[in-house]
Amino acid sequence: MTAPRIIDDDKSEIRAEIDGQSVRSWEYHDEAGRRLRMQKAHEFAEGWFQAELWGAHYKTAQKMRDALEGLKFVHDTNPSDAMADIPPLDYARHILREVRRAAHDALMPDDN
Image (tube, rainbow, N blue to C red):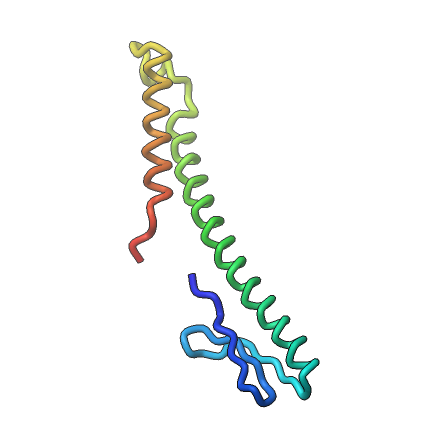
């Protein structure tokens, strides 16, 4: 995650940059204005970081939800239909292993 870098040119402008690209700027005319704009710039950067963090968690939660929905689809029928000769406790262990595998796969970082 990359938070914006806050840069003050010590003349009249404060800007937020990401990878050398300006994403937001604030102008000021005196020291009081500079302090106020600097506070706003730091709030902007913190908000940017929190939004990226929330987005990462949301993406992980969505992947986990999709994995569990797939398991629900597979196991939503009566277990006695598909596995009539398996004791209920063994069937529960089987489902738990599948949930663990799905969680592991969903929580692994993307390669891209």
